Structures are given as C-alpha cells and as structure tokens.
Length: 126
Image 1 (spheres, rainbow, N blue to C red):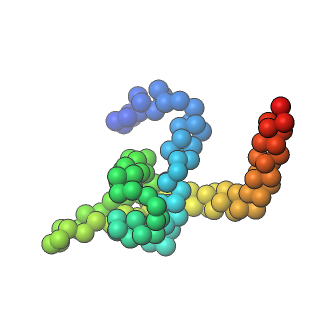
Image 2: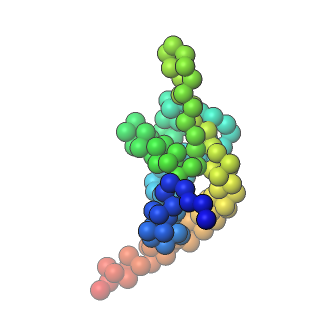
C-alpha cells in the first residue's frame, strides 16, 4: 500500500464533517470562494470585493484555503511581483453546494430572525 506525506495525520483528524465545516464555515471563507468564482483575483481586488475584512484576516484565510486545496496562489516573477489567487477543481466543486446553502439562507433568513425574536421575547418574560 502506498502512503503519502500527511496520511498519518488524516486518521488523527476529528470527524470529517466537523473538520471541513470548521474551515469553510468561518466568517470569511465562503465570501472569498464566492469572490474567486468568476476567475483569478489579486489580493487587493479581493479586499475591495469583500469590503470589511482586514488585510491580516484575508491573508490568513487565503493561506488556510490554499492549505486545504480550495485555492491556488500563483506568484508571477515580474517587477513588481504579481500574485493571483484562483479556485482549484476542489474549490470549484464546492461552489454548487455553497450556492445552494446561500440560497437556502436567503430564503429562510426571515424565519430565523422571527424565531430569534420570539425566543428573546419569551426569555424577557421569564
């Protein structure tokens, strides 16, 4: 049986669902993946597209998405150097379920907000 670097770690990971959702379910990953859907983007273009993310958080999230294989980082040897981020085939394969989740959230958000308000009203009565 052939083993690859990191195979040992794979079996030491927590539940696969929790492992993946912890990464893509953070505050910024979905927005970054969505911003890369049309094509490769440079760092500053992503900053403008997302808006309220700090440079440090964008950099950290891009590194994590690259580490997990959702995106690639390409450095072009120019002066000044140019770096572009793009979706990998794995990242592209995630777009459809991600868009379904976003559509579901958009459709049901008013119900969730109403449920929160009902819950809060009950809590305030007790």
